[in-house]
Image (tube, rainbow, N blue to C red; front, side, top):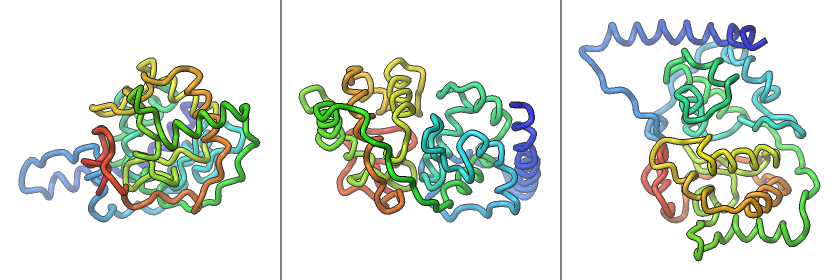
Length: 258
C-alpha cells in the first residue's frame, strides 16, 4: 500500500524537477539555497500547480479528507496549519529529525520546493473543527494541565505554552503550530518523542528543552487539558506574538515575530 501512496506523489516530484531545471537554466550563476525557516514564507508564495489536490491524495489517506484528521484518529490535522510549520515538519521527516517510516518513505526524494508547495496547499485549506471530546482526566489533572499551558512553572524553567503558541493556542504565522484540535494520544506521543530524543527540530531545539523538564504526570495533564478545549476562530494562526518568545527556536524567526 505504501508504494501505491508514494506513486500518487510522483507527479508532484516530476513537476518540481522540471521547474527546478528551468530555474537553474535561467539563473545567471549559483544561488544560495533558501533556508528552511519562516523567512522562506516572508515573500508571496509561489503559484501552486494545477491539480495539487489530486497530487496530495497520499497525504489524506492518513490525515483525512483534505488534510483534516478524523476525530478519533491518531494522525494530526494539517489543514490550516501555518505553511512554514508544515514545511519545516516535512523537511524534518525527510531529513531524519522526525522518525515515522511511512512519512519518510513517501517524501524522501522530494526537494524543499516540492515540500513547500504541499505546505502552502494544506495551509490554505479552511475547514471547521469538530467539537472537542469529553475531558479525559480528573479535575485536579485538568487544572494542572491548564496551569502549565497558561502559566508554565518558572521554578522548573518551564515556559507557558501560550508564550510561544499564542494566547488562543491556535499558533502564530508562519511557523508556530496551534496545539488545539489534536488527539490526546498524538500530543502524548510527540511530547514523549521530544523528551526521549526521537523527535528533533532544527537547532536550537527549544521544544526538546521544554519536554525534558516535564514529568510523565505533566505530559498527561497538559495533553488532557489541551485535547478538551474548543478551537476558537476556526483555528486560524495569529499574525504575531505580543512579546518575544522565551527562547530561540530553530525554524522560527527571531523572537517568534515576522
